[in-house]
Amino acid sequence: MKQRTRFRDHEKWIFIFTLLLFAISIFNLITGKVTLSLTEFYYALLGNPLIDFHEKIIWNLRIPRGIVAIVAGGMLGLAGALLQSVTRNELAEPGILGVTSGSVLFAVVWLTYSDGISLSPYLLPIISCIGGLFITFAVFYISSQSKLGHLQIALVGVILSSILQSFTTFVLLGNQEALGNMLLWIIGSLNGRIWIHVEILVPIAIVSITIGLCSAAIANGLRLGDHQASLIGLNVKRARLFLLSTAAILTAGAISVVGAIGFIGLIGPHIAKKIVGEDARKHFPLSALISSFLLVLSDAIAQSLVLTLPIEKFSSEVQLPTGAITALLGAPFFMYLLSNKRRRKH
Image (cartoon, rainbow, N blue to C red):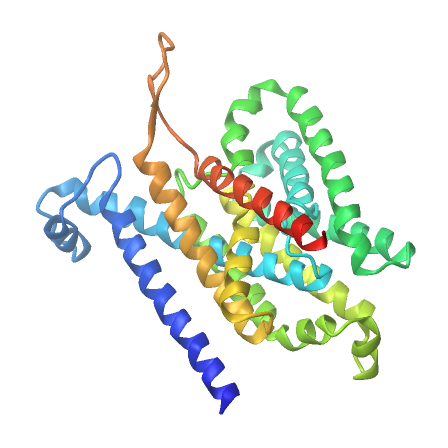
């Protein structure tokens, strides 16, 4: 009876955050540079707009952008939950463990030096996934050599992430013409995301999210500790590498479309864990859902904030990239988690 009650509570929170995600998605569809009333939005959605360009705004721009935000947010949230399970560290997330930096470096090198072939948007996710998997295998190998298991993974990831970020900077400084075009992508932005980006992202998401959610039993086994997991027949090294690889593909797939948006994979899983606990069967899906909500919310905030720059001969109005909003939300949250962790130790 107690177990049934817990799962009912989990379903209740799934329902609540689904409603919140739906509400913020509708809000995001009707607001922006051109704000629509609910009546205008309704008719534009049905293909019978009161003003002709409203249909193009809704169907060609805002709906694909919203789908990308929901899917990418879910991928980053699930990746963060997987990494926190592997490392048993609530501060773990794709950016801190180097997965993001590896994906970004490979993508930047590809976009900078591959000439015309880089124009194919379908190749970038593959290159990005290779980069994410490469750094994942490197982190796993170095940490396994230390024989400290999960304790060493986060530290190795932070060190390699710093090195890879330096390489990315060198590449961009060597090709300053591309710097302006890639800056928003490196920060993370949903601007200009259209249906082709949905076509790229959704197949990767379906496969990787399904694998991630189905790996809940493995994550629960690792949560018992290496010794106990071995006693129940779990190959700890293979299980850890499998979860890390899944998290890498989730992260790289999302980054290849929305750029290096940070902290979503930290905040969502942490909130989910506070609500439903550490059981991965409940934690994983709620982490993905909350992270989707947070990314759509951040995008709504980004679209409503416009900075005015006092620069002559340039457009004075600049819309904040979504990655800047997630950083503003995530940095204080990370500091809170860090100080809270120190407090518990003392």
